[in-house]
Amino acid sequence: MTDQFEVIVIGAGPPGQVAAGRCADGGLAVALVERELVGGECSYWACVPSKTLIRPGDVLAAARRVPGAAEAVTGQLDLAAAFAQRDYMTSSWSDQGALAWVEDEGIELVRGTGRLTGERTVQVELPDGGGRRELTARRAVVLATGSSPQIPPVPGLAEARPWDNRGATAATEVPGRLVVLGGGPVGCELAQAFRRLGSQEVTVVVRGGRLLAREEPFAGDEVRAAFEAEGITVRTRTDVTAVRRDHPGGPVTVTLGDGELIADELLVATGRRPRTGDIGLELVGLEPGAPARVDHRLRVEGVGGGWLFAVGDCNGLAPFTHMGKYQGRLAGDVILGRDATDVADHGVVPRVTFTDPQVCAVGPTEAEARRSGVDVRVVTTATGGVAGAYVQGNGIDGTSQLLVDQARRVVVGATFTGPGTQELLHSATIAVAGQVPLDRLWHAVPSFPTISEVWLRLLESYGL
Image (cartoon, rainbow, N blue to C red; front, side, top):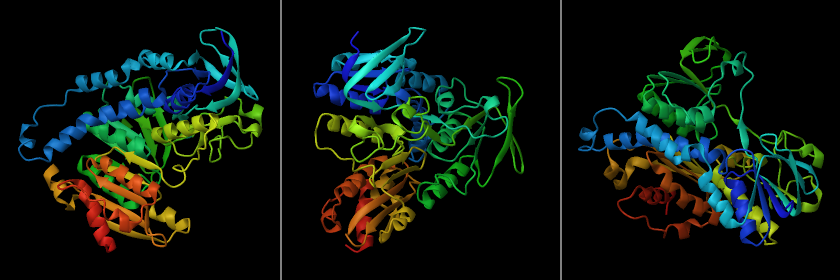
């Protein structure tokens, strides 16, 4: 076996795949190390299965907003079919389909757990007692090891064997009663998904004061209102003091500061941490378990020679699959000697929470912009106030907001809430990334009748 490569990538999730593919396409010999499935968390336990499970409820909700179609929505959701589609989308947790891409790219896949052992060297512990393999990189090593769920240190919580995102997205049954700890995107998406799939009681417990705390306050308020209208209970400013499950598969008791909740299943969605604790960072002078901080060319800071890169969740910049893939492209370009600099991670991060209403945003929130010293003007309009929204059905509510840098007269941030607003986001991302002057942006005419006409309303509100 070939043990010397020009590039070694540890982690075959989307960021690692993109980095490896970019380097291979540039003619470099690449080894891709993966201990689980090629395709990573997103493909098998996160984005793909969760959005697949969300989709049936979204389609039914959309139909019920349309007179004529609403009357045709009868009967129960076919849960078996929904789970079967999830299994299809994850290839039933097999990565055989991804291996064709690896072969086509000429990349050598090394199955096992990779760990840095020194400068440009990686040791791989092979599976099933297969020993170890020593790899050397002539040019670069790329860390793409992702992140792991955080389990809060609540007495009895770990012993209760709660769901994390993997348990929830791989579920084969819908719990009658579900408690969700955490009000971020994962907790909110899965709470609503399981309510619509058939859970009779869903309670979201949040330590802070609102859902989606990293987005604009109105976004969390609108999602909470929608949840409560669907029968989802939201408990904010609530601490969990203990958890107990007396026997496997039995009910779980969640003790709060002011009482108890009894559920059939408990989902913990209280954040994630970089998966860097056991990859040998200490052997190159870094702190194990901490994010692998990088410069604007995705090179890990504190490591001389510019040979170590980090992309995706493990660097702590922006824990989104699309941002990890962007970073993978940039790292590959830098390794190939091209002039590439990370721009998007510093003020142009797009994100979508796939609840109903959806929450779609790019750039900073108003509070973040002001804290950074930018004099922003906030412009808002009702997402449902344009003809395109009425065409979609009744009850298309939400808020569309732009943050305008007054000194430069460019959009620096945007948030759109409402059913199916995800496709509004990329136009905002282009405006922010391109720093398009408002006087020029005014000439980007939205088609009628589409919800994109909110752009016209926003610019009119600004005074153009």
